[in-house]
Image (spheres, rainbow, N blue to C red):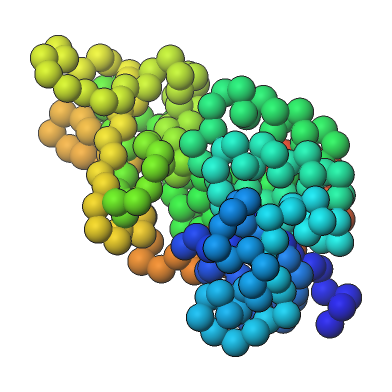
Length: 270
């Protein structure tokens, strides 16, 4: 059992943190060796199993990521951009694979992650599910096939507690559509329409975000032409698909050379 890769989960008390802990514990290919929470959190010092309302797991929640990462083979991180940037250097120091599902990064944050990937194995994706990554590929292919007579709109929906918009998955889809068109997303992205906006600009890729209830995740990519529409859709109904994908990525990354990878690499879709 001790020969299995040791996994540390950050943001242990969050929706994804709890799901990742449960999936890792249920896996016969990995073992949970650490759970990290922010300083001052009420779970600090408690056994993670008891904190989650179940049986003891023998893993105590800590606010010291350096100590937690020291003996880890992989860190799975669905937290916040600020926390992830702190963790990336510590994961590299521990020579552990860093699986990042955090979204909402600014350009400066992404530059820091790219710099860290020169020395560390980093697998980052706005969405860890197989279906979404297939949707990314389909979006790129359809965008390649259709010219600007077809407007591209990306509509996403999530639960009311999500703090960033557009979602990381929506941005993945937007990047794929832009790549298919041979343009840069930051030059054609249209967000937050309100008021008298004027006619839609040809070639732009639009985004719309819906927030409410307990929606796990829904993404539509709409190619709207004169007289017809093509709609590519993915609907997630269970967060376990993201946890399973993240754990798959953590195991896939074992023994990989330093670099920046994503789920298309993990799933062999590139």
